[in-house]
Image (cartoon, rainbow, N blue to C red; front, top):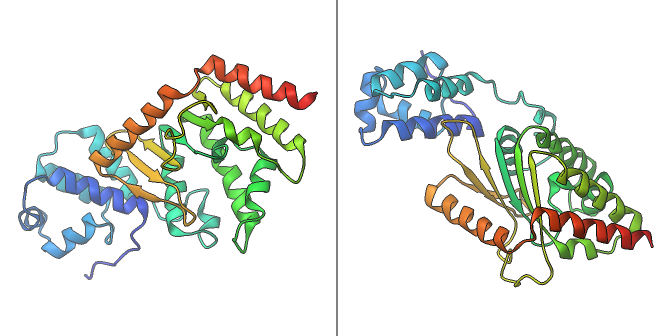
Length: 279
């Protein structure tokens, strides 16, 4: 029976990448023979081009001698998930694949660390702020982008979230007037009270090198998935799983966080801006 070629979804690519890590130094041909496969089939599974069943995941891992029952079961579970079944599926034909991949990764993350050098990060944006930011985008369907960004914020009810917000964002001038920023400041204050949220402001007095390299998000997941770092861009971002690159960006995030205001001082400054807008 001919193996059906599958679209390399982000989940399928991650399943394949984890199997490749477990294969280690064993040659692909030798690993394929353990399952009675040819090398091409295993190569395409590891690249996310072919689907692998949960039974095959367990069988391959047993033959590879993988001593990680919980990790194997997690990979087997994801291998069985059908593509296009997440809440984000209705947006699949309205945004770039890179953006959709990021949304899917973000929705499954256990921890999220994010910095944006100029604006309030998307997961913390109020409805009015989102609309103001995206209504003038170059998209042919800004309403879909607005709905998608707001829907993504549900992850804040589950994941551990650490955001570094630039103070300069509070000086933005919007056509809709100061009420927009008042709502945004209230949303930030509400978020700062959530037990799973760490919110820090990068003050205007911080050296301009902090955060000057652009927006980034670092995601970590349940075992055995490796962390992912995403660098923002207009096409939806680029993602890296490379351990050295992720570690470099984690160190960069920590460096910026060290220059940001502590959580309590952040709340004080948010309240100060809110009070000034009420005067």
